[in-house]
Image 1: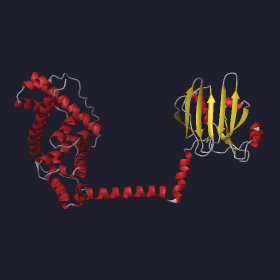
Image 2 (image 1 turned 120 degrees about the vertical axis):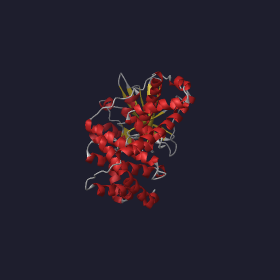
Image 3 (image 1 turned 180 degrees about the vertical axis):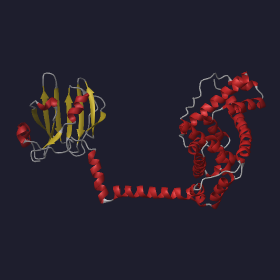
Image 4 (image 1 turned 30 degrees about the horizontal axis):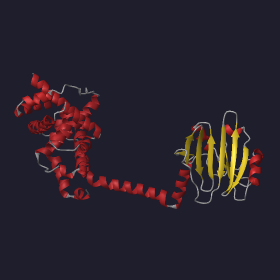
Length: 239
Length: 180
C-alpha cells in the first residue's frame, strides 16, 4: 500500500524536522559541555598525529601498491617468475592427461603391440582405455582402410554392454562432426573440450588432439562414457 | 585528492575544528562514557572519521565554522561514544519491529504540515541513536549511504537497513503520536 505522494512529503517533513531539531539540540549541548577539560599529557601529541594523518595515509597506500605491483611483475614478467607460474599451473593440471604418452609394460598389452606393428608408419601412437569397464576385456580390433587412411576400431563387448572406440587421422583441417542425429553438447574431459550426444540407446563422445580424431560409443550412461573417455591415453611402444 | 591533502586549508581547517570543539566533544563523550581515557579515544576516533569522510568526499564540509560542520562532529562523537559504551557494557539493543500497518498514509493526509512536522520531531526524539545517527547524516548532511558507512565504520548494507528501520519506526511513531 505505497503512496508516492505521502512518501515524498514524508521525506520533506523529515528533513525539516531533523534540521530544526539538531540545531536546537546542538546549541543546548554546546552550552552544557563547553566548560574546560583536562586532557592527559600525551593526548595533544596523539592528536597532532591524527590531524596530520591524511598526508601519511596516501603515501603508505602508494608504497603498498608499488610493492604489490613489483611482486606481480616479478611473478609474471621475469624468467624466475615464469618458472614459478608454470609450476603453480602444473599443480592444477589433471593427473591423467590423455594427451600425454604413457608407456607401460609391453607384455601387458600384446594385442596393442601387434596392432601397432601392423599400422602404417604415420601411426606413432593411438589411444587405449584404462577403465574398470574395459580392464578385464580383450578388445576385438579392426583396422579399416578407406580413402582418408586407416580407421582403428577397438571393441569391448559383454552380454550387458559394449564400448567401441574408433580413431582415425583425417587430412589436416578435415575434422568434422555429423550433427544429423542430434546436436552435440560440449563437456570437459580432463581439461580438454569434448562433445557428447545421446542417440537412441547409445551415447557418443568425440574429441580430437589435433592429429587423431577419437569417437567413443557405448550403451552405458553418459557419465560412464565421460569417465571412460577421461582414462584414454596415448599408447606407443616406442615411448 | 592529493591537492586537497597538500592544501594548507585542509590542515588548518581540521586544526581549527579540533581546537574549537575538542572540549565540547571531550566533555560530552565523558558524560556518556564516564572515563577520561575513553573520552579521549572517542575524540580521536571522531577526527579519524572526519578524515575518512574528507578523503572520500572533500566537498562535504563546505565551511569549517558552520553549525552543520559542528553537528557532524557531534553526531560522529555521539555515535562513537554510544557504540563504545555498548561494547563496554555488552548492551543488546532490541531491534525495531519492521511490521506495522501502513495507515500512516491516512494520518499524514489528515494533518497540517506543521502538525505533521511536530509529531515527526517527537518521534525523532524517541528514536534510538543507532537509527537516529544515520538519519541525521542522510537528511541533514546529505551524505550518501557509502559516505555514511565510511563515517560510522559500518557496512553499506547496515546503513541501508538502519535507514529503512528508522523511517519505518518514524512512520509508526507518527501514527502512534496522532492516536494519542
